[in-house]
Length: 306
Figure 1 (cartoon, one colour):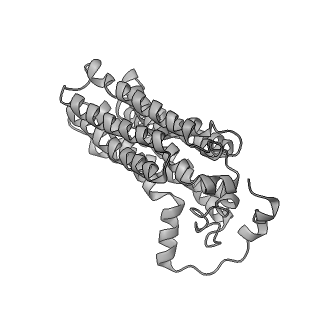
Figure 2 (cartoon, helix red, strand yellow):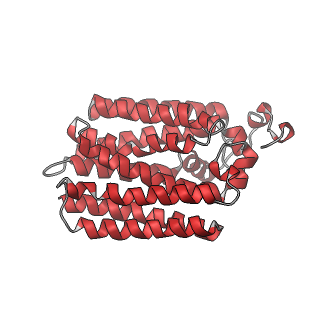
């Protein structure tokens, strides 16, 4: 837990800022919107849309869905960094972000985050349907106003944070179909379970950073990785069963099954090694396994449904 003397003063984050070159400003915007995370949101939204769509794809509807979701996700990411700026300044992994480094003010970040979020929700509501817009608003609300403050209150924040992280495919489905039938909640559950080993590995790798900033992470209290590793293994094994539901319910063809089993078992093996050793090397391998698992499994799921 950080001491009071380590906390940056409010005026430190709002003080004079140097002029920022255009190239640096562009890179700062990419950091603010968490470009890689936002890209994952776009991809999973695409998966949900394609999984729910039947027949030739409506290219314009797909564009509107992805663009609106991009704006909503980008806005939520910016707001998250606005509200966590003083804590980001304490962490080696995040201290060079644009707001802690004074390159972008909190006020400007707040304006950008609110604008992008609001425009994204309204855009989705107008160009796709109200349900997709409401789901985007729910995603923003739970991520920014529930998950973000909970990170300093309880270790359950990771579970709570997995909810908005699993909603993008539901948004995609809703945009394509105008409903939220049970099929899209299978995608939600797959993504929810996948996030747990993924973020548990990250939390273990950066446990000292999180502890220094005062975030309540299981890895900060789990000195021998026993609980963290067991949870990662439990969720990865549960993922195998859930990932087979699309075939059991006849939503996809058989050739999806060996792919889901292969990626699921490989993911679980990585989680087992992590639980057994608790080393940073094992955590990195688990993180890598999670990065490989998601696009391969979900991509095959969509292709096998066509």
